[in-house]
Amino acid sequence: MTKHITESDFYETIDLINTPILLANKETVCEYVNQAFLKQIGYHSQDIYDQQAWFDRAYPDTSYREDVKQTWWQLVEVAKHQGESHVHMMTRVQCADGSMKWFDIHESIIGENKVISFLDVDELQENNEELNDLLKQKDILLSIIAHDVRSPLGNIRQIVNNYKSLDLSELEIEEIFAEMGNQIDYIFNIINSLLIRTSAERGSFIEKREPINLKAFFSKYQDYYRDRVDKQNIRFVFELDDLHIVRFDPFILDVISRNLIDNAIKYTPENGHIFISFSEGPDYNQLTIRDTGAGMSELQSERILNNKGSRRLKSQITDSFGLGLIMAKEILERHQGKLAIKSQLGKGTSFIINLPK
Image 1 (cartoon, rainbow, N blue to C red):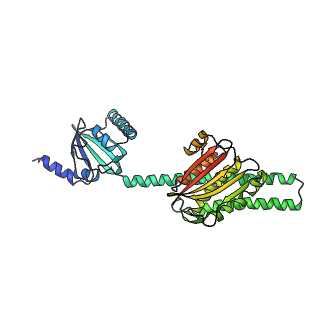
Image 2 (image 1 turned 90 degrees about the vertical axis):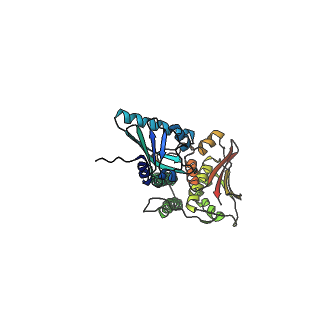
Image 3 (image 1 turned 90 degrees about the horizontal axis):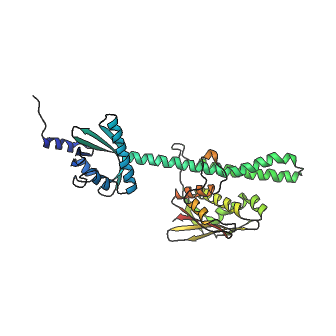
Protein backbone atom coordinates (compact mmCIF):
# COMPACT_ATOMS: atom_id res chain seq x y z
CA MET A 1 0.00 0.00 0.00
CA THR A 2 1.52 3.36 -1.07
CA LYS A 3 1.64 6.04 1.58
CA HIS A 4 1.59 9.63 0.28
CA ILE A 5 3.50 12.29 2.18
CA THR A 6 1.42 15.23 3.28
CA GLU A 7 2.23 18.80 2.29
CA SER A 8 3.15 19.71 5.85
CA ASP A 9 5.42 16.68 6.15
CA PHE A 10 7.07 17.65 2.88
CA TYR A 11 7.87 21.18 4.07
CA GLU A 12 9.07 19.86 7.42
CA THR A 13 11.42 17.52 5.57
CA ILE A 14 12.72 20.38 3.39
CA ASP A 15 13.37 22.39 6.55
CA LEU A 16 15.58 19.62 7.94
CA ILE A 17 17.98 19.92 4.98
CA ASN A 18 21.07 22.05 5.74
CA THR A 19 21.34 23.31 2.17
CA PRO A 20 19.32 26.46 1.33
CA ILE A 21 16.40 25.50 -0.91
CA LEU A 22 13.85 27.61 -2.76
CA LEU A 23 10.69 26.15 -4.30
CA ALA A 24 9.04 27.92 -7.22
CA ASN A 25 6.37 27.19 -9.81
CA LYS A 26 6.88 27.13 -13.57
CA GLU A 27 6.42 30.93 -13.72
CA THR A 28 9.37 31.21 -11.28
CA VAL A 29 7.16 32.59 -8.54
CA CYS A 30 8.71 31.77 -5.17
CA GLU A 31 6.39 29.56 -3.12
CA TYR A 32 8.64 28.47 -0.26
CA VAL A 33 12.12 28.83 1.22
CA ASN A 34 13.44 26.42 3.82
CA GLN A 35 14.98 27.26 7.20
CA ALA A 36 18.54 26.90 5.87
CA PHE A 37 17.72 29.49 3.20
CA LEU A 38 16.41 31.89 5.83
CA LYS A 39 19.44 31.30 8.05
CA GLN A 40 22.17 31.53 5.40
CA ILE A 41 20.68 33.93 2.83
CA GLY A 42 17.96 35.62 4.83
CA TYR A 43 15.22 36.47 2.34
CA HIS A 44 11.62 35.44 2.96
CA SER A 45 9.52 34.19 0.09
CA GLN A 46 7.63 37.52 -0.10
CA ASP A 47 10.95 39.36 -0.49
CA ILE A 48 11.82 37.39 -3.63
CA TYR A 49 8.34 36.58 -4.90
CA ASP A 50 9.52 36.11 -8.49
CA GLN A 51 12.75 35.80 -10.47
CA GLN A 52 13.10 39.53 -11.12
CA ALA A 53 12.68 40.34 -7.42
CA TRP A 54 15.40 37.78 -6.68
CA PHE A 55 17.76 39.31 -9.22
CA ASP A 56 17.13 42.83 -7.85
CA ARG A 57 17.86 41.85 -4.24
CA ALA A 58 20.63 39.30 -4.75
CA TYR A 59 22.54 41.36 -7.33
CA PRO A 60 22.20 45.08 -6.48
CA ASP A 61 25.07 46.02 -8.79
CA THR A 62 23.34 46.68 -12.12
CA SER A 63 26.21 45.60 -14.32
CA TYR A 64 26.82 42.36 -12.42
CA ARG A 65 23.09 41.64 -12.32
CA GLU A 66 22.80 41.91 -16.09
CA ASP A 67 25.80 39.61 -16.55
CA VAL A 68 24.27 37.02 -14.21
CA LYS A 69 20.86 37.21 -15.88
CA GLN A 70 22.29 36.87 -19.38
CA THR A 71 24.51 33.94 -18.40
CA TRP A 72 21.68 32.19 -16.55
CA TRP A 73 19.23 32.49 -19.43
CA GLN A 74 21.86 31.21 -21.84
CA LEU A 75 22.40 28.18 -19.62
CA VAL A 76 18.64 27.57 -19.46
CA GLU A 77 18.35 27.73 -23.27
CA VAL A 78 21.25 25.31 -23.70
CA ALA A 79 19.66 22.91 -21.21
CA LYS A 80 16.31 23.07 -23.04
CA HIS A 81 18.01 22.45 -26.38
CA GLN A 82 19.74 19.38 -24.92
CA GLY A 83 16.58 18.13 -23.29
CA GLU A 84 17.95 18.57 -19.78
CA SER A 85 16.00 19.82 -16.76
CA HIS A 86 18.95 20.99 -14.66
CA VAL A 87 21.19 24.08 -14.82
CA HIS A 88 23.67 25.59 -12.40
CA MET A 89 26.10 28.47 -12.12
CA MET A 90 28.26 30.04 -9.42
CA THR A 91 27.55 33.66 -8.47
CA ARG A 92 28.24 36.09 -5.67
CA VAL A 93 24.98 36.82 -3.86
CA GLN A 94 24.11 39.71 -1.58
CA CYS A 95 22.31 38.26 1.44
CA ALA A 96 19.56 40.00 3.39
CA ASP A 97 22.05 41.27 6.00
CA GLY A 98 24.14 42.94 3.28
CA SER A 99 26.97 40.39 3.32
CA MET A 100 28.26 38.94 0.05
CA LYS A 101 28.65 35.18 -0.37
CA TRP A 102 29.47 32.84 -3.23
CA PHE A 103 26.89 30.13 -3.98
CA ASP A 104 26.77 27.37 -6.56
CA ILE A 105 23.10 27.69 -7.58
CA HIS A 106 21.33 24.62 -9.01
CA GLU A 107 17.87 24.66 -10.58
CA SER A 108 16.03 21.40 -11.31
CA ILE A 109 12.61 21.19 -12.95
CA ILE A 110 10.35 18.55 -11.40
CA GLY A 111 6.99 18.38 -13.12
CA GLU A 112 5.41 21.84 -12.93
CA ASN A 113 7.75 23.03 -10.20
CA LYS A 114 11.34 24.14 -9.77
CA VAL A 115 13.67 23.24 -6.95
CA ILE A 116 16.55 25.70 -6.56
CA SER A 117 19.36 24.83 -4.15
CA PHE A 118 22.24 27.01 -3.00
CA LEU A 119 25.57 25.35 -2.19
CA ASP A 120 27.76 27.63 -0.07
CA VAL A 121 31.16 27.80 -1.83
CA ASP A 122 32.24 31.10 -0.32
CA GLU A 123 35.30 29.74 1.47
CA LEU A 124 36.35 27.74 -1.58
CA GLN A 125 35.94 30.74 -3.87
CA GLU A 126 37.85 33.01 -1.50
CA ASN A 127 40.68 30.46 -1.41
CA ASN A 128 40.67 30.38 -5.22
CA GLU A 129 40.75 34.17 -5.36
CA GLU A 130 43.61 34.22 -2.85
CA LEU A 131 45.50 31.69 -4.98
CA ASN A 132 44.86 33.72 -8.14
CA ASP A 133 46.03 36.84 -6.32
CA LEU A 134 49.21 35.08 -5.20
CA LEU A 135 49.89 33.89 -8.73
CA LYS A 136 49.35 37.37 -10.11
CA GLN A 137 51.62 38.85 -7.45
CA LYS A 138 54.27 36.29 -8.32
CA ASP A 139 53.98 37.18 -12.03
CA ILE A 140 54.34 40.86 -11.20
CA LEU A 141 57.43 40.23 -9.09
CA LEU A 142 59.01 38.05 -11.77
CA SER A 143 58.25 40.70 -14.38
CA ILE A 144 59.85 43.35 -12.18
CA ILE A 145 62.95 41.24 -11.63
CA ALA A 146 63.22 40.54 -15.37
CA HIS A 147 62.85 44.25 -16.03
CA ASP A 148 65.38 45.25 -13.36
CA VAL A 149 68.18 42.87 -14.32
CA ARG A 150 68.07 43.59 -18.06
CA SER A 151 69.99 46.84 -17.70
CA PRO A 152 72.98 45.51 -15.69
CA LEU A 153 73.13 42.36 -17.82
CA GLY A 154 73.18 44.55 -20.92
CA ASN A 155 76.02 46.58 -19.44
CA ILE A 156 78.01 43.43 -18.68
CA ARG A 157 77.48 42.08 -22.20
CA GLN A 158 78.62 45.37 -23.69
CA ILE A 159 81.78 45.33 -21.59
CA VAL A 160 82.56 41.72 -22.53
CA ASN A 161 81.95 42.37 -26.24
CA ASN A 162 84.04 45.51 -26.47
CA TYR A 163 86.90 45.44 -24.01
CA LYS A 164 89.16 43.24 -26.20
CA SER A 165 88.94 45.68 -29.09
CA LEU A 166 89.97 48.60 -26.91
CA ASP A 167 93.51 49.60 -26.11
CA LEU A 168 93.13 49.73 -22.34
CA SER A 169 95.64 50.24 -19.59
CA GLU A 170 95.76 47.91 -16.59
CA LEU A 171 94.09 50.59 -14.48
CA GLU A 172 91.25 50.95 -16.98
CA ILE A 173 90.80 47.15 -17.09
CA GLU A 174 90.66 47.08 -13.29
CA GLU A 175 88.00 49.80 -13.35
CA ILE A 176 85.97 47.86 -15.95
CA PHE A 177 86.07 44.66 -13.92
CA ALA A 178 85.21 46.57 -10.76
CA GLU A 179 82.18 47.96 -12.56
CA MET A 180 81.25 44.48 -13.74
CA GLY A 181 81.52 43.28 -10.14
CA ASN A 182 79.17 46.05 -9.01
CA GLN A 183 76.66 45.11 -11.70
CA ILE A 184 76.84 41.41 -10.73
CA ASP A 185 76.45 42.26 -7.05
CA TYR A 186 73.43 44.35 -7.97
CA ILE A 187 71.81 41.42 -9.81
CA PHE A 188 72.53 38.95 -7.01
CA ASN A 189 71.11 41.38 -4.46
CA ILE A 190 67.82 41.56 -6.38
CA ILE A 191 67.55 37.81 -6.89
CA ASN A 192 68.59 36.86 -3.36
CA SER A 193 66.15 39.34 -1.85
CA LEU A 194 63.32 37.76 -3.81
CA LEU A 195 64.36 34.19 -2.93
CA ILE A 196 64.54 35.02 0.77
CA ARG A 197 61.01 36.40 0.71
CA THR A 198 59.41 33.64 -1.35
CA SER A 199 57.69 30.73 0.37
CA ALA A 200 58.80 27.41 -1.13
CA GLU A 201 55.64 25.73 0.12
CA ARG A 202 53.13 28.15 -1.36
CA GLY A 203 55.17 29.91 -4.02
CA SER A 204 54.01 33.22 -2.56
CA PHE A 205 55.81 36.33 -1.42
CA ILE A 206 56.21 36.70 2.35
CA GLU A 207 55.76 40.30 3.44
CA LYS A 208 58.00 41.51 6.28
CA ARG A 209 57.39 45.02 7.52
CA GLU A 210 60.11 46.61 9.58
CA PRO A 211 61.38 50.10 10.45
CA ILE A 212 63.31 51.64 7.56
CA ASN A 213 65.66 54.58 8.04
CA LEU A 214 65.09 56.40 4.76
CA LYS A 215 68.38 58.28 4.72
CA ALA A 216 70.38 55.05 5.00
CA PHE A 217 68.00 53.20 2.69
CA PHE A 218 68.28 55.63 -0.23
CA SER A 219 72.01 56.30 0.13
CA LYS A 220 72.79 52.96 -1.57
CA TYR A 221 71.32 54.20 -4.85
CA GLN A 222 74.26 56.54 -5.30
CA ASP A 223 76.44 53.45 -5.80
CA TYR A 224 73.81 51.51 -7.76
CA TYR A 225 73.46 54.25 -10.35
CA ARG A 226 76.88 55.90 -10.10
CA ASP A 227 77.95 55.08 -13.66
CA ARG A 228 74.71 56.34 -15.23
CA VAL A 229 74.44 59.55 -13.22
CA ASP A 230 78.14 60.35 -13.72
CA LYS A 231 77.78 60.00 -17.49
CA GLN A 232 74.83 62.40 -17.48
CA ASN A 233 76.22 64.58 -14.68
CA ILE A 234 73.01 64.09 -12.72
CA ARG A 235 73.03 64.84 -9.02
CA PHE A 236 71.04 63.07 -6.31
CA VAL A 237 69.65 65.40 -3.64
CA PHE A 238 68.50 63.53 -0.52
CA GLU A 239 66.22 65.79 1.50
CA LEU A 240 66.14 63.23 4.32
CA ASP A 241 67.40 63.06 7.87
CA ASP A 242 67.97 60.36 10.48
CA LEU A 243 64.50 60.85 11.98
CA HIS A 244 62.69 59.95 8.78
CA ILE A 245 61.62 56.36 9.46
CA VAL A 246 58.77 54.35 7.94
CA ARG A 247 57.51 50.86 8.68
CA PHE A 248 57.23 48.94 5.42
CA ASP A 249 58.65 45.92 3.62
CA PRO A 250 62.18 46.98 2.54
CA PHE A 251 62.26 44.62 -0.45
CA ILE A 252 58.99 46.02 -1.81
CA LEU A 253 60.12 49.60 -1.20
CA ASP A 254 63.39 48.79 -2.99
CA VAL A 255 61.52 47.36 -6.00
CA ILE A 256 59.31 50.44 -6.22
CA SER A 257 62.11 52.95 -5.64
CA ARG A 258 64.46 51.35 -8.20
CA ASN A 259 61.84 51.57 -10.91
CA LEU A 260 60.97 55.17 -10.12
CA ILE A 261 64.62 56.27 -9.83
CA ASP A 262 65.50 54.36 -13.00
CA ASN A 263 62.74 56.23 -14.83
CA ALA A 264 63.88 59.56 -13.37
CA ILE A 265 67.45 58.99 -14.56
CA LYS A 266 66.25 57.92 -18.00
CA TYR A 267 64.30 61.14 -18.59
CA THR A 268 66.48 63.67 -16.75
CA PRO A 269 68.83 65.63 -19.04
CA GLU A 270 72.48 66.31 -18.41
CA ASN A 271 73.25 68.44 -15.35
CA GLY A 272 69.82 67.66 -13.94
CA HIS A 273 68.79 66.79 -10.41
CA ILE A 274 66.79 64.01 -8.74
CA PHE A 275 65.32 64.97 -5.37
CA ILE A 276 64.14 62.45 -2.76
CA SER A 277 62.10 63.85 0.11
CA PHE A 278 59.74 62.74 2.87
CA SER A 279 56.66 64.14 4.59
CA GLU A 280 54.12 62.81 7.08
CA GLY A 281 50.37 62.88 6.53
CA PRO A 282 47.40 61.85 8.69
CA ASP A 283 46.89 58.47 7.00
CA TYR A 284 49.97 58.04 4.79
CA ASN A 285 53.67 58.82 4.89
CA GLN A 286 54.77 60.32 1.60
CA LEU A 287 58.02 59.63 -0.21
CA THR A 288 58.57 61.86 -3.21
CA ILE A 289 61.03 61.18 -6.04
CA ARG A 290 61.20 64.31 -8.17
CA ASP A 291 63.26 64.87 -11.31
CA THR A 292 64.05 67.91 -13.43
CA GLY A 293 63.38 66.11 -16.67
CA ALA A 294 61.04 66.65 -19.59
CA GLY A 295 57.92 65.82 -17.62
CA MET A 296 54.87 63.89 -18.79
CA SER A 297 51.61 64.87 -20.37
CA GLU A 298 48.35 64.35 -18.50
CA LEU A 299 47.54 61.50 -20.88
CA GLN A 300 50.82 59.72 -20.11
CA SER A 301 50.24 60.06 -16.36
CA GLU A 302 46.73 58.67 -16.71
CA ARG A 303 48.00 55.69 -18.72
CA ILE A 304 50.31 54.75 -15.87
CA LEU A 305 47.80 55.33 -13.07
CA ASN A 306 45.10 53.41 -14.98
CA ASN A 307 47.45 50.53 -15.85
CA LYS A 308 47.24 51.20 -19.57
CA GLY A 309 50.93 51.23 -20.39
CA SER A 310 52.82 48.71 -22.44
CA ARG A 311 52.42 45.69 -20.16
CA ARG A 312 53.35 42.44 -21.92
CA LEU A 313 54.10 38.89 -20.99
CA LYS A 314 57.25 38.61 -18.91
CA SER A 315 58.87 36.75 -21.80
CA GLN A 316 58.28 39.83 -23.96
CA ILE A 317 59.46 42.51 -21.54
CA THR A 318 60.78 45.57 -23.32
CA ASP A 319 61.70 49.09 -22.28
CA SER A 320 58.34 50.40 -23.48
CA PHE A 321 57.15 53.62 -21.93
CA GLY A 322 55.71 53.24 -18.45
CA LEU A 323 56.37 49.53 -18.00
CA GLY A 324 58.47 49.78 -14.84
CA LEU A 325 56.20 52.52 -13.46
CA ILE A 326 53.07 50.44 -13.92
CA MET A 327 54.67 47.42 -12.27
CA ALA A 328 55.83 49.62 -9.36
CA LYS A 329 52.29 50.97 -8.99
CA GLU A 330 50.77 47.47 -9.02
CA ILE A 331 53.11 46.04 -6.41
CA LEU A 332 52.68 49.15 -4.21
CA GLU A 333 48.89 48.82 -4.31
CA ARG A 334 49.12 45.15 -3.36
CA HIS A 335 50.81 46.27 -0.15
CA GLN A 336 48.22 48.93 0.76
CA GLY A 337 50.13 51.82 -0.73
CA LYS A 338 49.26 54.31 -3.44
CA LEU A 339 51.20 56.03 -6.22
CA ALA A 340 50.47 59.59 -7.28
CA ILE A 341 52.04 61.57 -10.11
CA LYS A 342 52.51 65.30 -10.46
CA SER A 343 54.08 66.33 -13.72
CA GLN A 344 54.28 69.21 -16.13
CA LEU A 345 55.85 69.13 -19.57
CA GLY A 346 59.24 70.80 -19.52
CA LYS A 347 59.30 71.09 -15.72
CA GLY A 348 59.90 67.56 -14.47
CA THR A 349 57.91 64.87 -12.70
CA SER A 350 57.20 64.01 -9.07
CA PHE A 351 56.33 60.42 -8.16
CA ILE A 352 54.69 60.30 -4.74
CA ILE A 353 54.79 56.98 -2.88
CA ASN A 354 52.04 56.96 -0.25
CA LEU A 355 52.90 54.40 2.43
CA PRO A 356 50.18 53.43 4.95
CA LYS A 357 50.88 54.33 8.57
